[in-house]
Figure 1: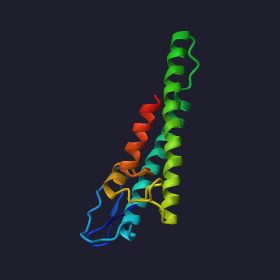
Figure 2 (figure 1 turned 60 degrees about the vertical axis):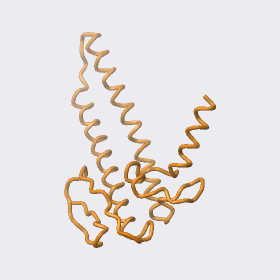
Figure 3 (figure 1 turned 90 degrees about the vertical axis):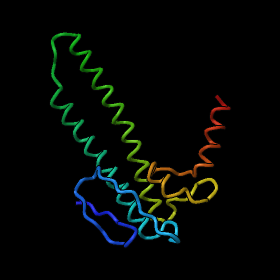
Length: 151
């Protein structure tokens, strides 16, 4: 079972589906990254990590179940190709899990939600869209412009 914070009243609701996402309900005048925000993003990040870990487990089981020694070279090549694609996907997810862990560390230390370049608030909606974001939208836009100019 997972717990979700409903910011409007500070209550906690229980939800057993980790894919469930309820946007944070902002309250006028509330402080940025208050306790309700921390609970909300902690749960969001933990649910996302849990989902990715389940996918990794499914892949391991799938590859063990599907690992057959096909006599036909074409069948073997197809299986190897499928496994390669699957492993690339899992590698990207492994890197994402690392970013999620870093975000959880920032959340615990009180640095989560603040831009690493300028120190400004990243924003609740941006963090909900990309919970591992470390830059505010302005700094990220500047980074992308610089990246395009470098080629």
